[in-house]
Length: 305
Length: 291
Image (cartoon, each protein chain N blue to C red):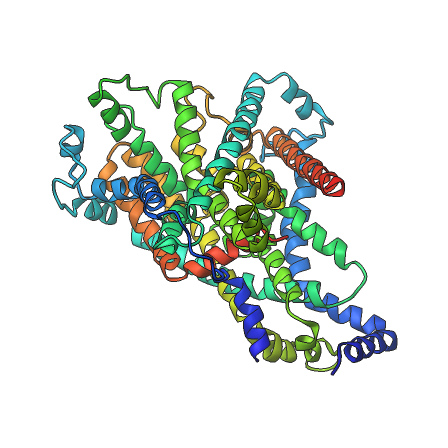
C-alpha cells in the first residue's frame, strides 16, 4: 500500500467512527492514566493541600493557610539548605558537563577498547546512591580513609571530611561528580556520533586545528545536547537524596543539608508533615520554573540561529 | 522484516562510519584515557580490597594497594549478622514484578501516544513527562498516606505499584514508536475486535529492542531505589538492599570491611546486568538525550 493510500485509509477510518477510535485509545491508555493519576497527580495535589495545614500525621490537621511558607522565610536551616542546593548546582553542573564532554572527545572513534572505557566511566552511574555513598564515606573517612592517609603520607594537610562543614561539602560534591559524569559522557558520545562528518572534514581541510574544530564546529553543533544535559543535571541536583542522606545525613551541623533532605527530615523525622510538604512543593516549583525558563531560552536561541 | 530490524537497531549505538586515515598517533590519547579510567574505577577496586581485609589491619593502616589478606570474614559477618539474603530476595522480587508491570504499561502507553490520533493526546503526554520534574520527596507523605489507606504498607506492592508510573519509560517507548514507519503498524491501528491481540502479535515483535532497554533500565531503577522503600517498608525483614545497607551502615558505623562486603554484594547483580547488557543501558541513556 502506498503512503497516500495508507493515509487515505486512516482518514476514512477516522471519519467513519471517530468516537469509537478515541475510546479505544483511552482504553489502551487506561493503565498508565490510572497509575499516574492515582500515584503521582493525586499525591501532588495532596502535597499542596498538606502544605497548607499543620499536619503531623497524628490527629486531625488544621488549615493554616500559608503559614508553612511564611515559616520558610524565617528558617535559617531552610535558607542554608537552599543555598547549598544552589551552590551544588552552580558547581557540579558545569564541572560534570565540561568533564563529560572532554572524556567523550577522548573516547571518540578510532580508540582501541573504547566500549570497555565507556563502560568503566558509566559503571558508577548504574550503582545505587546508597552504595556510592558508602564507598564515598569510607574513602573520605577522616581517620582511616585512603584520601587522608595519602595526603598525610605526602606531608599535606588532611581535611576533617566528617567534622568540617566545608570539607564534608567538598567530599559530597566529589562523590556526586564521580557518580554522574558517566551519564554526561554517554550522552555526548552518542551526540558526537550523530554529527555530520562532512562538516568536520571540511573544517579539517580548511586547516582548522583540532582545538578550533572542537571549539567552533563540534561544540556549537552540540548545543541541543548541551542544553538537554544541563537541564537533566539540574533536575538531578535538585533531586539528590540518597548520596547526601547516607554519606553525611546533611551534617555536620547542616553543612551538607539540601532542600530534599531537609524536606524529608521535616516530614518524616520531625513529624512536621505540613512544613516538609511545603518545602517539597517549593522544590518542585523551582525545578519546573528552571526547566521552562531554560526551554524558552533554548527556543529563542534556535530562532536567532 | 528488514526495515523494522534496521529501525529497531537504531536503539543501539550506531556503528562509526568509515573515517579517513589519521596522521596523529593514537597512543597519547589512549594513555590519557587509560589513566583517567584507572582513577575512575579505583573506588570500586578499593571496595573490593577493603572487603577482603581484616578490621584490625585497616585500623592499623596495614593496608596497601593490594589486599594484604584474602579474608572472607567480612562477607561472613554481614551474612550472619543481618538478613542480607532476605534483602536480596526482597529486592529481586520487587524488581522483577515491577519490571513486568512497568514495561507493559510503558509499551502500551508509548504506542498509543505515538501512533493513535485522539483529542487530548499532547496534554496526556505533556503531563506524564512533566512528572519527571517532581522530586520523589515532595510526594513521600501523601503517597505514604495513600498506600497506607490501601493497606499496602509493609508489602512488596507498596513499592511495586506506585512506581509502575514511570514517565521516563513512557517517553522512551513513545520516541521509539515514533521512529517506526506507520505502514508497519497499520494493522495494529485498525479498530475493531482483537485490538489487544493485534498489539501483541504485531507491535510487540517490532518493539523487542525497546523492551530490552526498558527491562534493564527499569530493573536498575527498582534495584537501586532508596527513598520510597525506606518509607514504605518499615520492618527489617522486608527491606530492599539499599534500605538494608543504610541500616547496616548505622549498625556497623566503622566496620568498613563488612560495609564494603555488603555494598559489593548488592552492587554485583546490577553490575553483571550492566556488563551483559551494556548496549541496552547505553541506548536507553543516550535515547534520553534525543528529544
